[in-house]
Amino acid sequence: MSSRYKIQKKLGTGTYGVVHSAIPLHPLPSNPPLVAIKRILPYPVTTPKNLQHSYITGGVSISALREIKIMRELSLHEGYLKLYDVFRDEGGAVNLVLEYCETDLSLILLKNVTLPLPLLRSLFHTLFLSLSHLHSLSILHRDLKPDNILITSDRKVKLGDYGLSRYKGYEGMSWEAVTQWYKCPEMLMREGFYDGRIDVWSLGCVLLECFSSPYLFRTAAEGDVLQLKCIFKVLGTPGEEYKNLPGGVRGLKWKGKEGEGLPKSGDSSFDEVLEKCLKIDVKERATCEEILEMEFWKGEKVGLEGYL
Ligand SMILES: Nc1ncnc2c1ncn2[C@@H]1O[C@H](COP(=O)(O)OP(=O)(O)O)[C@@H](O)[C@H]1O
Ligand SMILES: [Mg+2]
Image (tube, rainbow, N blue to C red):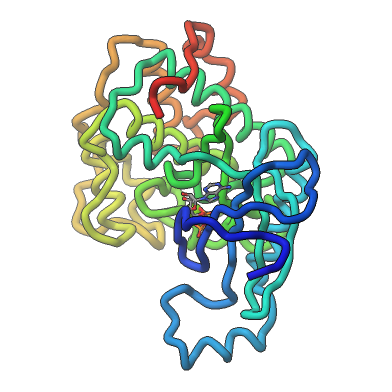
C-alpha cells in the first residue's frame, strides 16, 4: 500500500472501502504507535473487476474530497478524530490516515451488555457536545449510527465517518443520506429543507438502542415507507399535514393514531431527552443545544472502563 505504513489487520468495511490498522514507518505529529487507514475506492467495493477501471480514470471521488476537507477542518478542534495524513495509492484509492480507535459503539452493542444511565450520560453528553460544535461549524454529519461512533484506547468517544457529511446550505441536500434505521421522518417523507435536527434524531435512535433492546426502529427490510410505518407504530401517526408529501405513506389512516410509546427508564430526565430527540414533527424536536441544556446531564457520570 505504501512504504510509509505497515498494514496490520482489517478493522472494518464500508460501501467504498476498507479500514486497516497500520504502524507508521515515519514520524507523524504526536507519534501515534498505531493509526487507522481508511482506503476509499473510486467505486463501490462490490464493483466487478472488469468495470473498476472505468471509475479510476475519473479520478478521486467528490465525496472523498469532501470527507478530507471536513476532517481537516475538524482536526483543528479538540475532541474530533485526527486526520494525520492523506495519500493516493497505485490502485487509484485515496487513503485517509486517521487516529486509531480501539472499538466502535456497534461492537459494544453486540456484546448485549446493559449500559447504565450514568455511563450513557457521559457517553452521550460528549457526543451531543461534539455534534453541537459540528453544527456550529455549519456541518451536518448525516450518517450517525453505532458503527460511526468510535472509541479510542484511552476511552474517549468520537464521531467518525464524515463520508456523507455536508456544509449546510452550501450545496444540494439530497435525501440519499443517513442509514435507514437512523433516518428522521422529514427525510423519509422528503419534506423539504432539513437541518441539524436530522442528526439529533439519529443520535436519539442510537441512545434508544443503547438503552433498550429489541431495537425498535430496526426494520427487517429496506424502504422509506416501511421505516416510517415502524416509527409511527412506536410514536403514533401524525396528522394529515404529512399525507401528500412525496415520500408519503399510502394506506395509513392519518388521524393521530396513538403509538405504543417509547420504553421508560425509570428516570424521567432521561426519558425526556429521548422524547425530545425523537419527535416526528421537526418543529417540536430539540436542537443539539437545547438537548445539552436538559436536566439529565447534571446527574452522575461514569466512564467506559469495564464495558469494553
Ligand atoms: N479511526 C478508526 N479506528 C479504528 N477503526 C475504525 C476507524 N475508522 C473506521 N473504523 C472502523 O471501520 C468501519 C468503517 O469505517 P467508516 O469510516 O465508517 O467507513 P464507511 O464510510 O465505509 O462506513 C467503522 O465502522 C469502524 O468499525
Ligand atoms: Mg461508516
